[in-house]
Image 1 (cartoon, rainbow, N blue to C red):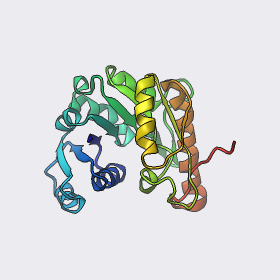
Image 2 (image 1 turned 30 degrees about the vertical axis):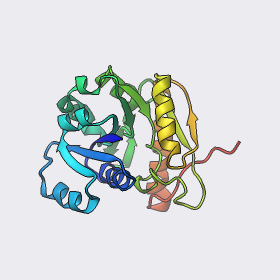
Image 3 (image 1 turned 90 degrees about the vertical axis):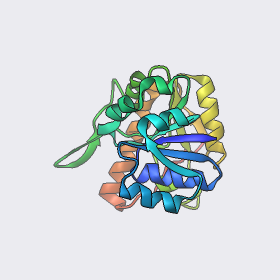
Image 4 (image 1 turned 90 degrees about the horizontal axis):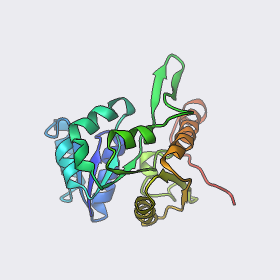
Length: 213
């Protein structure tokens, strides 16, 4: 599968490296795809990985993974070209964090969410919220901590959620569908619980969530 990843931070690079190692053709999109940082990463990531502009990446991917910092998300999608996402499944991994004197907080919530905003930014895409409640190193390995964590998803398109569920199950994720894209409000709040626990208790990202049934 051709997978485009929008965002070149830890999440984007980790996903791209991992997916390329599993045989997918992966392109990571950047405002500066020829940067020294990305070219060094590309050498390590192997022949299945490539870099491109945001627009090239959006056109390339059969599946798109959005892995931007929230404050740069709208601009990145504008530069990628909203029409280039038409009909495509987009996995939104973002958390809408704001940072103040007391540390990170949830910048969007209650009556809106990052997932809903992303769906509005690229209205012809089929957006599914997922993967925002774990560290990058766990996104392709739900058993990384010794027990299998759960993954919550949300989105308006049933077919897209079916595709994302199959994609996640390929890596061993048990998937729990919470409903429409508005349920991103709950998943992002859970992401905030993950962040708060990171900063206030553990000071590392080695924790995840499991629904006990």
